[in-house]
Length: 462
Image 1 (cartoon, rainbow, N blue to C red):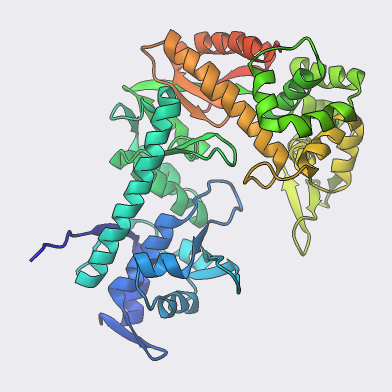
Image 2: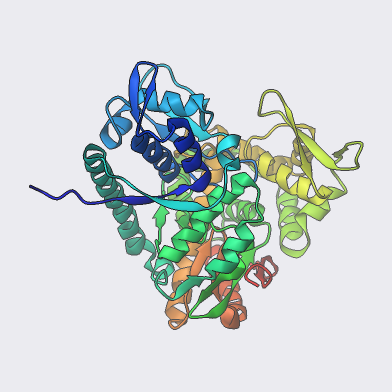
């Protein structure tokens, strides 16, 4: 007889206490004509956690897509009563529901789930039927993760090769830090801490969305970065100021300046395609406006520049806010400063946002936003929600991660190298030299001297 592999997984203390209470010490619960097994209920909660797209940002709902095919394959055939039960005891809810077609139900944990007692307990499955499903599911999941990691090693090995035993997190310090987070952020970030503790490295690239490298570091909360070291040495990062507007300027400069001939022009010809490039060029650009846009980004502060030109709102408590009209009912979004509000509105202006503040920003750079609108309205060129976000982020990833980071790894062979979206990370002792080299290579690959845009952020890892 073939021996079934055992499986133990971490479950939130409060969740285990709640389920034990609901089952009144029994292993089976009669619910709406069905016999629910306690082990199955607990594992389903863990499975949803495992498959959830964890986000560290404030006020972002963590969701997971579950369809009947996935659940029958990885859980049980009669899965519906289990999901209904978790809804009834207010642990999960459906932010989105599709009643037709092959779409998935989009589930999310409730506030009650996040507010349950913190901390985790290892739970062991004993049910043989469930173990077989779990082992099969884990095998498929691990296979998919391995496929993603192999692809990353193939195309960006210089940015993933340092994910090894030398990369460490002060687990005690990080755990204490996470314990101060609110209930929702605690769940996301304690899982990140556990990944560092177990050296469970994850990395992936989605060429059809942003082409960025997503790793354990990219989803590490900024407050936890100071607990990370490599070979017990402190780290630091080189960051790009005003990165998305800067890249927008670089792209437009390379499209409309016929003297430009570099890696950027080659990339844009391939990414945008002949049809869209011809549309953009025929649309034209106000060169005086473009030069002013570039000067503000490269030599000043774009957001401070716009602060004096864009009228914004304040409430009775003297807090800045704008009205988010993308949701119904509309919601007020608050900021600590007018500059922070302008920064958010600038991003929304690039990606089809609406509102009076955005209209005022667009009016400052009309021809530039005409091109942005042209790109966004073009036929879909990616799986991303916005054509322009895909172009900007893919361009950023190509220049920074595929070209500059690779050059760094060749020139500085004895230092680790990581990325966090639009920043590069290495030893604090080497960061100034890496920044200077990054500035130099950026000019080679884009034709733009953006020396002032590359800054060392010493505070993030200390």
